[in-house]
Image (cartoon, rainbow, N blue to C red; front, side, top):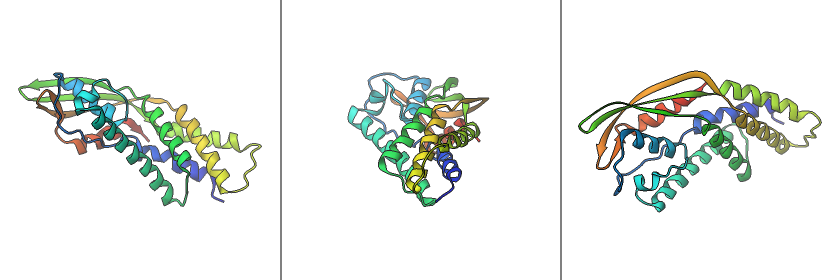
Length: 215
C-alpha cells in the first residue's frame, strides 16, 4: 500500500502543471471594439476556464467558445491522469473530475489586476498583477487533513488510500489562500481588427502560470 502522504503530496503538486490551460484564440468576426485591457481579461478568463460575457463575441460564436472550453478541460484532466499514472496511481473518472473542480475553485480565488502601460497606434503594453496561490500552504493543509481523516478510518486496500488522499486534497484546495506576495508582468499586444491579441501566446501562458504560483 502506498504511503498516504506521498500520494497527497503528488496530488497537490499537480496544481503546478494544470493551473492554466493554453487556449488558442483565433481571429473571428467581432462586433464590439475591445480595449487592450478588455482583450487581456478574455485571454485570462479563457485560460482559467472562467466564464466571461465577452468571450462569445471575442471568439466568434457560442459553438467555438464551447469547443475551446471543452478542449481546455480535456487538457487539464488528461494532465491530471498523466501525473497520477507516473506514480502508478489509477484514479476513477469521478476522482479526476473532483480534482479538476477543486483546482478550478482554487484558481478562481486569484484576482488578476490588469493595467494598460502604453498604447501607440496598433501596439500596446499591458501589465498583470496578482497574488500567488500559496502551494506550500496547500501542501501543509493537505498533510494535516490526511492525518485527521486517517483517525478512525478503516483502510482495506489502496483504493481506500487514494480516496482518503483525494478528499484531503480537495479540502486543501478549498481552504487554499493567496500569499501576501504579489507578482507582475508586462505583456506586448497588437491590434487585430476590433480586438487586441497577445504577441507571444505560448510565452503568455507559461508566464501567467508562474504569476499565480508560489512554491
